[in-house]
Length: 201
Ligand SMILES: N[C@@H](CCC(=O)N[C@@H](CS)C(=O)NCC(=O)O)C(=O)O
Image 1 (cartoon, rainbow, N blue to C red):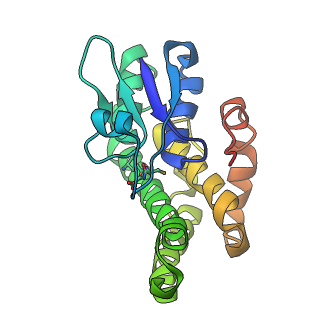
Image 2: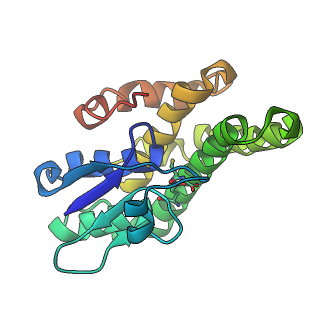
């Protein structure tokens, strides 16, 4: 299998952490592509018509894409149990919350990177941050006992989302007012799978 990826993507990192946590790192060849909204690699578009990473090319079956699909496939491939049936709706909602944070955080980066300065909107950027801020607060309260439970895909997604906030939006200081989540992340970020996949530019 080939994973189409690029360094700092939090969505790719979800897949990388899942590969580590499920002992499948060697089952995949890692291929770096350009995933830019204005000029994605031809190889990426051929794999995923919407031009986003991650995409997973499988030798004996169609290519799959979107981190949610790929992580679920990888889990099913080895029966890793990252989607426990008894808690499945909570797990999927937690993953969706983390993915929503990543979407907003990536869009904030894109606004500065791909839009000419005179067309950038501080108000729009701020409303993306508000989504993240509300989600972080929900993680710190409603979700904290779930986060402290057995490992699942929701926790992996939250770990990757928070790490990406540190990486790209550190000045926003998400830990302020969210001590329980900060404490959870401190421990989670020390997992070997997280340490092995830390984002780099
Ligand atoms: N829902 C997708 C989101 C993937 C995504 O937004 N990836 C970004 C990189 S972090 C991307 O490929 N952006 C290129 C674009 O928006 O055209 C997933 O979970 O995989």
